Amino acid sequence: MKFNSEAEEGSAKLTMVSILIKATALALKKYPRFNSSYDRDALILKKYIHVGFAVDTPKGLVVPVIRDCDKKGLIEIASEMRALADKALGGQLSPADIQGGCITVSSLGGVGGHGFTPIVNAPEAAILGAGRAVTEAVWDGSGFQPRQMLPIALSWDHRVVDGVAAARFLGFVAALLNDLRRVAL
Image 1 (cartoon, rainbow, N blue to C red):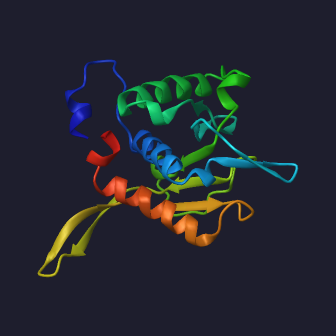
Image 2 (image 1 turned 30 degrees about the vertical axis):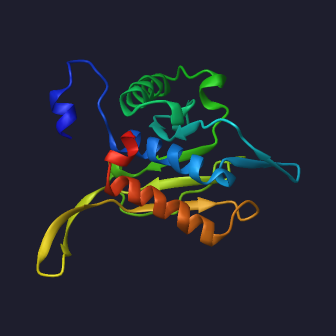
């Protein structure tokens, strides 16, 4: 990303996952039913937006949580993400670092996966998964143009939302990724 090449030494780098976290937070605001969980047959609608992200550690995956993602910019999210990932890799996450998530973002891009079915991290209602971005030739009506393509998938708790709502949620995230200016607004 051009921003990363211009960033100061030692500052947080924007990654696809940090952008996905922000886009997911905005989708939770637009589709608040996804920002809920079931607790003993009662639906709990959350009034905050905390997004977890999967980190591959030597002891397996852990999911640290970035709080109030809807109120933070991309740089702040990237910075918190880096700090939490470093804590995870060092085995230093506290219980508070991994609790309170509303949704999880998981990416196989770093290990080369293209597509997968992410598994909901209970009690959350949904999880967004992303594969590795690739450049593909896309027909524009008169010729093929190179386009960056990112496979994304959503898994959700059917007690909370149905497939149509999930398609709308995922379509909203895809629209944000297609025009990153909308993420920054």
